[in-house]
Image (tube, rainbow, N blue to C red):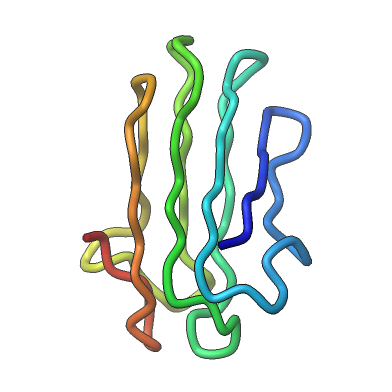
Length: 98
């Protein structure tokens, strides 16, 4: 499993998950909200992304799908409280919350 750290200054997943099939994304929103976009589900090679909000601030983590894709029937998923988990499985045409 690949572990990625995101924060208000570094919000991009680009190039950080290459070669991984499972990715744990630890999100520290202490300095501000995090808004990140998933890679294209068809070509990324990742079976599962797990996002965890690690801090107690009121700032949220928002995860959006690639263009023309969805997360289930939603346009995004958010985590507003500490230790909140967003688990996303690759469904090839988009990701699904599990």
